[in-house]
Length: 459
Image: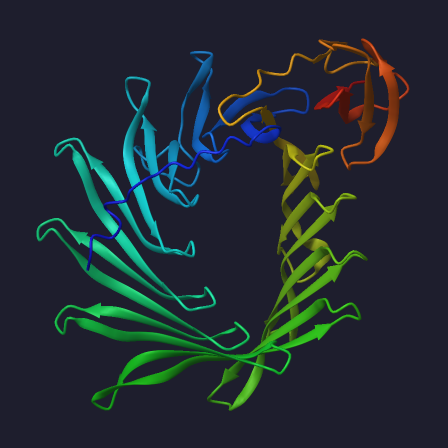
């Protein structure tokens, strides 16, 4: 086992052709205990290198006692010193070769704690990876685990081997290896998992999966095998066999798939799970329902479901997910809904999360995330914060605009992206007193500069 990317040469790629590039600067999240009250929860701050690639990502939480932001940690992390900030470095081809993780220390500053290193081949495939943790005692990086990858000529991953660092022997110990096999159409036909046998100092079989397809490339059969000791020898013993039947609509969309389990004792196929999908005229998935077969009721029971809605540009503006409370889909409890707002350039500017109240059977507002952008003017400079401001916000009908260099064109959109009104040659006020209460998007065009802001009309 080699050094597993512990010596990665980082060459930062610099570009000077970034004028006008729109970059996500921060995301700020607010919690709403009521519809009218809110307070800050967390924010994420992004920084970029001169090539426009993400150079760092930091997460902060709002400290109400200090009335300010302090370093936090990302929600997937649950340990005390897990990262709340990441810094990224790239090679000359733009591959991310280094990721340093930081946690917020007692001295109220970021302290480095983890390092992830990757190596790439000439085609941009990651061929090695290592995860390391900083040791204050040794003043050095201590390897934790590493991986090596292999690829075929088509770019498919054909192998993935995992190693752990032996701190006593100062060497990498093999742990497991996976191998993947594909047919001429690029469909995976077999998967092998190996575990390292230390006594034999070699890889030994653990599990195997096989897939078969029809002439159209649609999966028809899946089988899973375990490497099992039978009659004084190890053999492949089938542990699981499934087949799948598909139904398509006239547009070629897969609207139904039914999975069957093979019952060797009864020597027959039995129903297992079913999935049904619905699509709109544009081919967008708008509903996905999963069922499981109930032998007791001799019928399908709704298991979980999801629904999506799209704007005119195809962005997902609404997503609701359900789980099962009984066999009827009408009784499904909605356990989450997300709404998204996009500006005229297609960039997300807001995300609202709701939870389902099982007592009132309504969606209740939980959090809102607001996305803020900046525009790069060159490879090394960024323009300052936009001087154009709108107030008051919320408003009862009149919006004041400050910072306009000259009269501008203003467009007002609904949250679903529908154009409601266009107003030309606006100087400093916009009268929207005839619009109903709600949240809207204001698009201000001044010369070659466009600004997008949300505003609220209150009753």
